[in-house]
Image 1 (tube, one colour):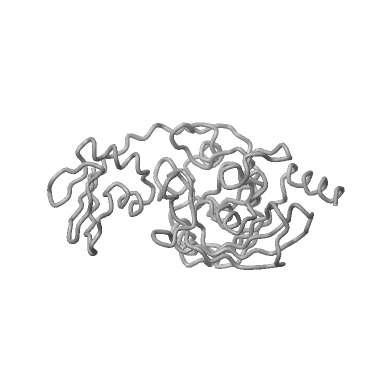
Image 2 (cartoon, helix red, strand yellow; image 1 turned 90 degrees about the vertical axis):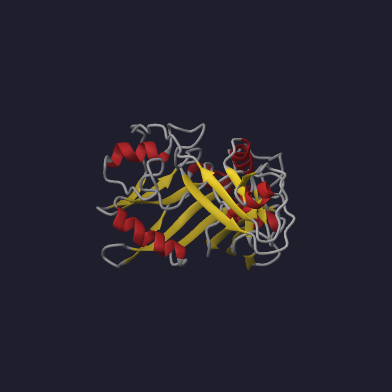
Length: 305
């Protein structure tokens, strides 16, 4: 069991479960409420319930029980490998594949495939559920994903991510006709205040998020764009483009429920990944070709233009 502590330094009045859900990234509000129900959250030494209102100088102590992690089994799942050496692996992730095991997805993930392909040669920094994983992309997003085969490489590349020196360019199709040929969206992203499974623009509790977009082709009702990330927040491109009323085609979470094309989630592809190699110091850039469904979609739009 580990402890986390928080000191309230302002006149607050906020519910403790809401406050902790914003402060403790990676933990849902429902999980925090369960911790309270089980007597693992204290204010000034006394156990509290979820509706406790915070006051100035309150000291919160949260007991986080150790997780009992399931055994993750290597699986012989084919991988589209763009590049591999002793330190890193660049994978072109297909649509519908979850990156790492989590509740409801303990098999068929990229990690299951990596464990079969790499054996013991994966970094262990992110624990047994995420060996080798430095960053992730959503289940229905395709394209370049960086995997580290040892802890030294992982540490160096995690630092590059932290200082925003990794080049990440995505291609997407958005709804509507963008007014400008290029632009920058600079708006912080945090958990949605009501739907905790979603992210949203959140100026009060969000983290810095910057996306630069460029129009590649126009199709009237749709626009083909590239997006360069400065930051890598959860659902960043999806939230940012929806915030300027141009949600990603096929994205039923942040865009319209109905789509005129038969798609599996958002039309988003991690195309270019540029890193400084952790051992050689050489700058390397990898370009994942567009998946077949994306090329087909562009072809149909060009015909109908």
